[in-house]
Image 1 (tube, rainbow, N blue to C red):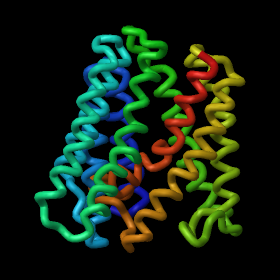
Image 2 (cartoon, helix red, strand yellow):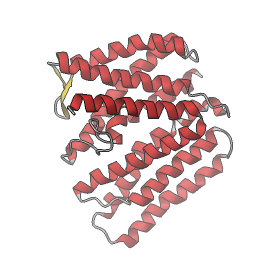
Image 3 (tube, rainbow, N blue to C red):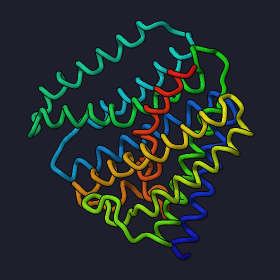
Image 4 (cartoon, rainbow, N blue to C red):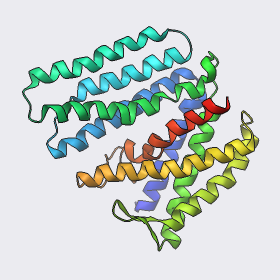
Length: 271
């Protein structure tokens, strides 16, 4: 099976699983994003271990899961703010656990344990405030799904335009294959798609979806480059191999790790 076919089939299955879980109900949504966080943080810790960093993988993943679950229930007003006291205790425990591990570079280990939470778990936890907007108990996936579709469309067409017309490097030091032609081509298709998204999901107006497409394109690119910087620092091509033709979970969701927080802020400003 050639790489393009493998990439296409994997991408199709991936989209069906993610979209299906988001659309079905809030419990499938919970399971989906918990899985993404666990797999993504596991990939991150495996990557940094190449640099002789012994991050607390289990502790970090437990904190990441706790961050998402606490925000999931807080966004629905099922629990109050005191739930976050548990997270403070878990962060403190990372320092205490490191005292007993007798590993080299203890503060680097602590730092990278917590960085994974900040880089992966916290951005994904913000999706709770998108599907339960304004502390509503009503689950509404429209805004999140529209954002993800615009991000995927940008990413896909940036790849197509880049392969077909790419001549001017976008950020050669970090990602030699990315081009300005790919960036603008992907952005153009994302902008055009915003009109179709606005017809399907009327929760916000076309102009606002247009701004979302720009957020997905610009900050999605920064997210992609950030993950490329991480992989380049450890001399690894893909963050994992769970998605044939695409790499790992971080490779597939790198664009949303920086754009999701900006999308969340934008929704808070206009809601």
